[in-house]
Length: 635
Image 1 (tube, helix red, strand yellow):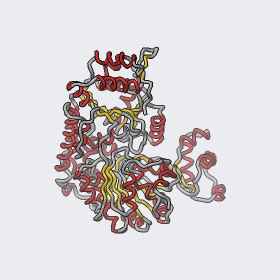
Image 2: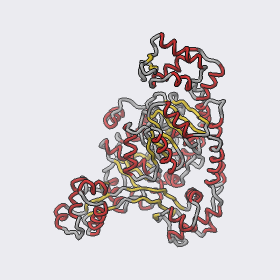
Image 3: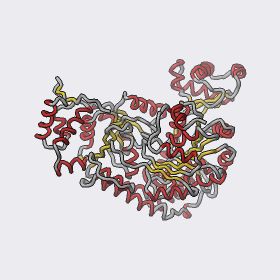
Image 4: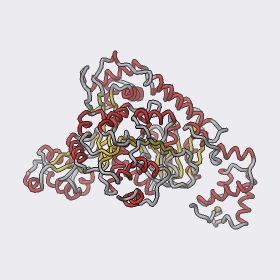
C-alpha cells in the first residue's frame, strides 16, 4: 500500500502536509470519528481526499455549498481522481446514471447536498454503495448554536445506521466550544472519537480597523499603499459592480463577483484574478470558497459582516503563503445601526412568516396535506411581485421556515447546459432532423466535445455558435429538436431557486416557530452582531486577541495590528523599531519619503533620522526616481 506522503505527492504534487493534516488523516485511517477545526486556508479537503485514495470504496461528502462541490469535483477530476456530485439542479436521468456508477464502484468521491439525505429514494440507493467514509464539510451548520444552522444537516446521523463501521469526519473553519460539542452530539460520534483544533492565531496577518466618513477614498488610499492581490468584501450584489467601477476609474485593476453571475463569467473572473491579470476582486461572500490563491496581500471589508465567524473566514483568504498580509475593516458612524437593522430584518414578525408560508403553497399550487418530499422550481422574484411582498423580509421568512423544518429553501442554483448522445454512432447518422441547422450543430458538438456517448458533458452554446458560424438560438433549437427525436438528451442552462417540502403542506394557522428557531436564534445573532461592533469600535485591545477570545482561545498581544502599533507609539519604542518599520516597507516595494512619514506610526523626525541612517549604512538604497528600496527580497 502507498503511504500518505506518496499519495500526497502523486496526486497533489506536495512534498509535505500542512500542520494538523497528517494527524487528522491518521485518525481517519484508524477508523475514528473525527472532528477537525482548521481555519480557512488550512487545507481541510486534503484530510479526507488523501486517506480515501488509500481505502477501498466510496467517500460521501456532505456540503451545503454547491459551487464548492463543483470546484472540488473539477479539481479532483483534473488530478485523474474519479469524483462526482448530486444536487437538486440535475435531471432525473443524470441522477440515475450517477447513482448507478457509484453503486458499481466507478467513483471515489460522491458530493451531495444535505437536503439530498431527506430523499428516501436516494437513501435506498445509498445503502447499496460501498461507502467507507462519511465527510461533513461546514459542520458548524449542524448546530443551532452555529452562525449558519441548516436543519437538513440533522439528517446526516440517520444514515450512519446503514454503515455502522464507517467513520465520520466533520470539518469546519470556525466553531466555539459549544458548537463543537453540538457537532459531536448531533453526528452521534462514537466513544474514542478524536478532536483536532488548529490555533486561530495567524502570525502573518495584521488586523486593522479604519474609521472614515469616505470609505471609497480610504479604500483607494489603502490599495495604493499596499501592493499585491486583494479582495474587497461587500454585502450587496449591486455594490460589487459600483465599487469595482469606481476603483477602475481610479486606475486600480478591479472586477466584481457575486452568486448571480453565470458560470462562464464566474470562471473567467476567477481565472483572471488568480493569474494576476486582475488585481482586485470586489465581491460578496460568495467569492473565496475553494479558491486557493496563496499570495493575497489584502482582504478589505468595505461592509462589516454579521459575525466574527464570517469575518475570520473571509480574513483567512489573505496570506496563505505565510508572508505579511493585511486584513482591514472600514467603518463609519452608521455601521452600528446597519448591523442592528440586519437583526430586525432577519427575524420578521411571526404572522408575516405564516403568511409567506401560505402564499408559497398557493404560488406552487400545492394542496394542504400534499407536497411531502416534492421539489418545486421557485421563481423568488416573481413570487414577491405576485403577492407584493418585500424582498428581504420574505427571503428571511423562507430561511426561518427552513430552520423550523416546514420547507427547504434551496437558494439559486445555476446548472450549465449539458448533453448526452442516446444512440450509437451508426444510428446517429441515419436520423434526419427537420431543423435546417441540426446537422451542422451536431457536427460542431462532436468536434468540440468528447465523451458524449458515455455520459453527460457540459457544453456552452455560445462557444459552438461562435466557432461554427451559427446563431446561439439556432444551436438551442437544433438541440431541442434532436432531443425530441431521442438522438440525445439536452438539458439547457437553468438558474432557479427550489422549494423542497420536508413535511406535507400545513394550514397557515398551524405554522409555529419553536423558541429555539426564533427567539433563541435572534438572541444569538444579537450577541454576534455586538461582538462585531465591539471589535470594530474598540481601540484599546489587540485585534487578534479579541478574535482569539471570541473563539475561546488564549493569546497575547500580536504586536502588529493597528491597536498594538498605536500602543507602542504611545508607550515608547526603540530606534530599532523605527529601522525595522522602514526596512519592511521598502522591502515590499520602493517608497517615497512621504510614504514612510504617512504610514509608520512613529514621530516624523525619527523616521527621517532612520531613513538617513539606513542609507548611510548601505541598508537602504536611494534610487534615481527619489524612492527608497530595501535590496533584500521578501521571503
